[in-house]
Image (cartoon, rainbow, N blue to C red; front, side, top):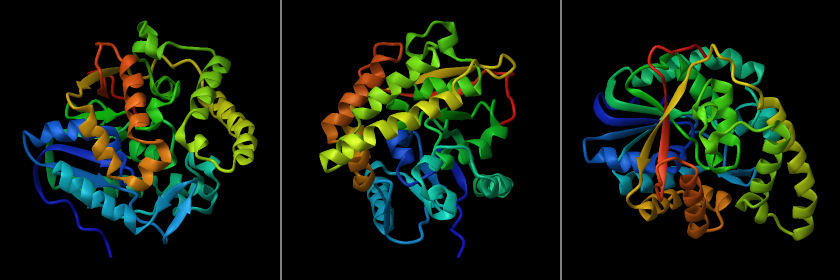
Length: 319
């Protein structure tokens, strides 16, 4: 049975979320701020699973829907699911975790126009002050597909692209993604996004990932020791595949900063998604440290911040 479309009407904010949790992980502050101005809609794209399973250390199943209901009630947003299949259930190629963070397979490339039509049709009855869509930091295939499905709208004044949490909190991941998309403040001296040689970028990313909850939770210890070199090799290959100089004909991306007055409330909202939060963070204090470390790299001296990106006026380009 097809999912119900969003209620027609005007929203202060619409967030397009690849999965249940991405909108709140990445945009909880924006959602809370927008609720003071009007209704907020979260449109979840890949929200269907083929059973109760745990893959790649992340839970896929009915509890995800209950987590979404709790977060929606706490933050006051309307949640609608398109119920497309999650990548791990959609194609056999994505059952290996390494393939989830690579470009879409041929079957998904062929399906992308249909996904684009479905997503845009779901939004057709709505208007909004601001539409937020994923930048696809980290290259998760579902995030990439949603980004590409809306890429034809780049340059619209009512559209911005959010940094995908937790991937954007991993060293080099945001800068490498922006390099792919075009020019950005790192080309103009922003130290947090400054270009680095691929080997140095890979070392930074590997060191940061080794400190993540995903790695530190691996048990027993010998498994963690064996996994370390394998994961490091995979990450180095991933960086090599995405590193390179931006092409000058691509658009210029400009940031907008949303300082967070209450970081604890943002973290509490993220923790509503217990099955995901525990996979990515050791505890709420670990999440707070990573939020603060991210803010320290963002110009403006914010204690905590969400950042979104727009394509400079007149610089719209195809996917």
